[in-house]
Length: 76
Figure (cartoon, rainbow, N blue to C red):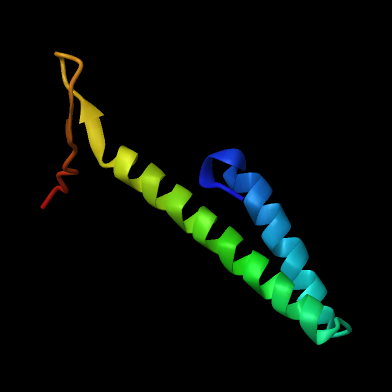
């Protein structure tokens, strides 16, 4: 499963399904280990996608069409 192959929402849905199955507790050990590994991969995909969006959100396009850092100025 690659980062580009699945959307954030799809990864979260699959991760939630895995968590539900593991929480039931009626899963054979080998299958639970596979679910856990799949869940960790999905968790990494979600984390990577969120990090990418966060990096994009910290930039703003200037008048020349170039991206530059965006600093939020808080009023004092």
